Length: 581
Image 1: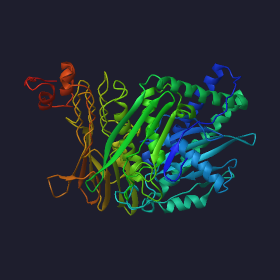
Image 2 (image 1 turned 180 degrees about the vertical axis):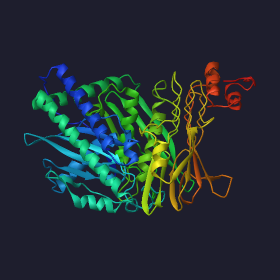
Image 3 (image 1 turned 90 degrees about the vertical axis):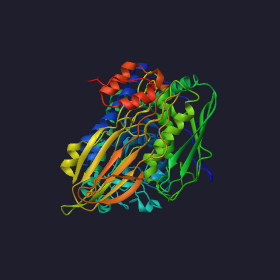
Image 4 (image 1 turned 30 degrees about the vertical axis):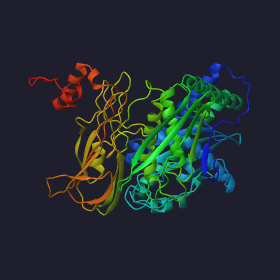
């Protein structure tokens, strides 16, 4: 996987040919059953979790693997989780071999080390080996974002950690569950390192329940069809997905396409990301040479996160009817120079890399591929997860909260971008206002679509969101991590860019708002307000081509103003002052 200078990853390079005896209908039934088993894992995790971040926002993912750690099926959860799970599974199994960790029946392993499992410390991975007749047959695995795992700030995602040690507790692969019992000492260590220990305990038990559900469903499939049919159908599914992917790639114009985009360093300078994509009859190669070197702040993204961006973007372009398994990724080769922002070395901090750098990587890939596939690629989305972390002591009890705020999707051929939605590498829900105000000393003072934030075009970008948090308690540590405060989301084919992110602070004794940077931590007092205006999506094609009926509809819905309409659609174009809903 790695040499001294460059990390490389290619799936399925050496796989034996298998002559199948399983009929196509049975193959399809097994493949579909595995998919629904992974979906049911996610439901079990959500329903039994404690924290709002998992129960309400569904910030978790689930998947099933074969006995060699090859992806069988995954639920439609969080792209940055799902893309890194196969890489993390490979690393976990390698770690177990090197450290003599035996894979036992009725056991589960846990890890959150990003350099093993991918993503960041908040994402805890739990893996269950599945045995049939005492023989290792498969794995159930899930990953969930825990709202607090220690570190410098509540929520565990700081803007200035210089090493991973400042970001929270690090768990190398170890047993969470063994011989049918939870390892109480592991729970004790995790709880002791979190500001919200009861949530951690409940969420970990929910992750265990999800894996048990996956094990139960997979063994039911084996009992129904037989282990030989299950094994052959799984391998045939790999071959089927690989063939479908190669067929789709064959429709791409061969050539080398490049892209460049920028991350916003808190000190004001830009960090450069570069990719070169080579499309040929042999497959597709992604080379990130020229990307800036790693930095001593948490904006670095481990290789698994970079890989997940490639998987996500390619699946959106080639079609979700291709099964998301080991075979569908076998035609991709990804090369990232070691020691760069997109492939850092331990112990560089990586908390923001999972949430913000992953988003910029997706934009980077889309930008490069827009030259090869101009009618398939959308304009840029809002390009940030807009992470909010806060916490403190209230009522003699420690609390911590984490959420992300949606943006506008980019316009695309024949369709406007979606307003106020989680884009690209995240796929979470919002946290309901009722849940926040019931559980936390926080009031949601404002929550609405952001006016005039959409990039103008024949097909406009989606509008961003305005969400304002008013503190009800004193001494709340509040951290905001956003992108696109300096670089607007780009439009395509003549469309204009979306509005940039804006973050405003208003003190309890001051009616005027102060502008904040995109990555800041501050201490708030009662009735202080932080208001986040998220970025809109870029527009697609010239605004002059937009239909009048759509302009009027946006005016009626309050998404744009008359001034915006006159500016972008025609300088002489006027909306009647008597226009009413």
